Length: 114
Length: 113
Image: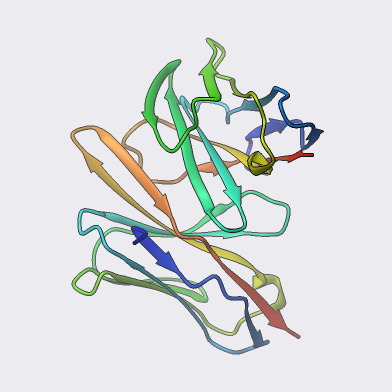
């Protein structure tokens, strides 16, 4: 158990809808990262937050947004969903910025868009 | 061209064999090199971490980095069925306080009893 909690584990929705994925980092970790994993693209970095502030942005679509709350949990919002958004979405956390690269991953949220 | 290239496999080997997993990269600014292991329906977990060129050993696992060739490897000795998983290489650079961690696509490994 990594200590990172993600909900929901599975989500099935329709095109055009909006969903919210939730992540609770490990106790004491200030950084939260969101990744998208699909079969053909591998693990793609979306966005990082550190102590409530956006720290780095990757290949995140404009239809997607995220935030980190004062209690350090994070939410990833996906809107106007398309079939291609079906993927595993992982949250990871680390102690801080400039760490050794060890990220602790949750078990992921599997999103299926029909 | 992707910054990090990794053969997706799948790779199947008999129990007890030596496994070699590899990644190549194009960005010479990468400073830290990692291997993550991902079991089915789980998130990736850090397996090995190296900074410099050379070898690093941890039990049955050896990570090798050749910065001159931009090539990293993970060797698994005496492979066990419990080693069956997807192995992802990852590389990190830090530039003026900004970090970038890039993953390979992962190699799916099956150890056959």
